[in-house]
Image 1 (cartoon, rainbow, N blue to C red):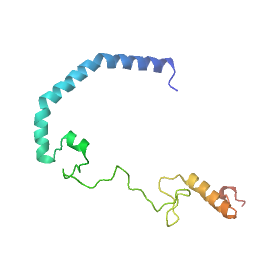
Image 2: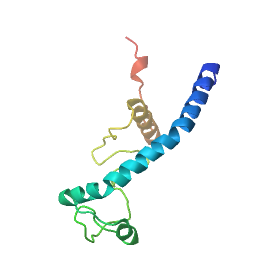
Image 3: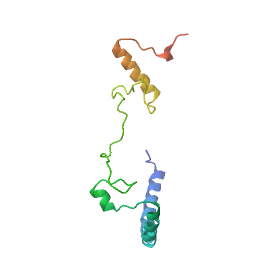
Image 4: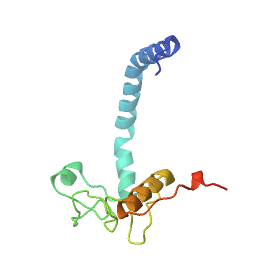
Length: 126
């Protein structure tokens, strides 16, 4: 998509604007950082514990306490009680992020595998 002449022209103009304004923005950013860099860090030390970047990269540091802590390797705390194939938890519930159509499809597959018939409610005869 976005292949019309109008969009091509807009992209071209945005690129030219970035070229023109880029050096100005960079100079403004450098000036703001050099001007207020020390003052901002002094103010931050009153509010939070400031840990140097080198210390954080060389070993795992708990940022909240500023000291060493037992942190696992960035793995998320997943719901291990959920079955991977059916996505059902121990109560037979699907996850909240799952689309109802997808849940219905998985239910149909599960029931067909057991040998029962899965009735489609949309095709009901009145």
